[in-house]
Length: 460
Image (cartoon, rainbow, N blue to C red; front, side, top):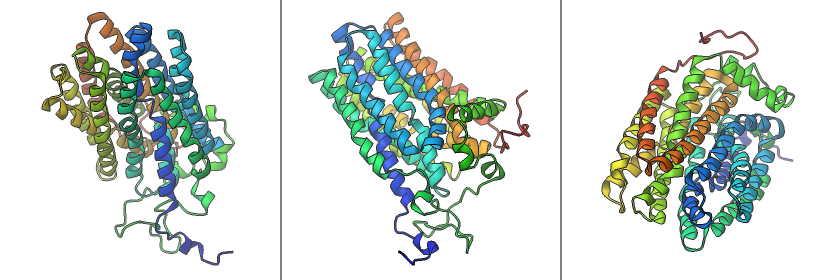
């Protein structure tokens, strides 16, 4: 039995929180395999079965919708049953949906495999998983960790999209889909054996938690003392771990929604994030490759450009997390949505059969901006709603996916109606202006216990 005092045992070269974050990153990476796949698989599916762009877009819309609507319940399920169990089951669903899709013979089956199974699986992790890990395991560096974990999805796009597109073009869409299923299933053992729910499971404090004897943050990996998120009344009072385990997942999720829905800032964040989803996953993520194909660009080349988006997404999201720890998140969101809108406005003139410098510039800027909105949005949810911020962020993320689902289907319908995507890109640019205005209107004000009457910012 070790005789080392607990305070000394907490001083490690690498705090266990970073290992948990690493496993979470790998799990998010594996689940992200399908996020980039539809755009690469829609053209070969159309060639094999003759399915319309609208019918395939509908399956993707169901996927994106379930991906978002599952998120707030997944946060509550992680509180009740544990992160490890929920994430392992989610990865298994993704593997089942991707692998089972090779048996499809009719378009309605696409709704089951792509829509329901993969939608529920990816939604059970989503960005709420990243927010849960960051909030439980880190008091310092939360914004940075949220940025790193968010980049896991971009890394998945970077890793999977080029081989999926190449295999789909050269061998067929079935081997490409099997690759996604195998990758998701391979991450399950790693999650099961190495992911833990709370720092107390390993006998440590969260990274950056103050030492009781010195009241200074411990376990820091450099000499600079960071800003630490000190728990507020709203964070420490409303819901303890024991209370969460004793409360139904659905009840907690809906209680969080009903509480947040009374406040204008929630609606501003939710609508802006819905536009974020519409202009990333819904438009570019799903329809960039088919649109580039319409202009004569090979699908594998367009897939390579989206992979470059993934490279710069990693840089942009991590840097956004660093900025979120230091600057007003609302100003960051205004900047991100503005740059995105300009890019979408110019995109119809940039697409061609070859890759030219202006297209590369678009890819770089859009990549840096792709999900840079996540760290500041998650930070505002935590700042405004305290201990309930993760559940509220789950509902805000649900809005993100509702926007993505609507845009994915609408863009497919625009393509079928007009023979091109121009009006879809311009519609996305207009929505970005709305998102920038809404982000600036958010009130940075802590709201109290959801079981008590609202004390601030109640909606008219």
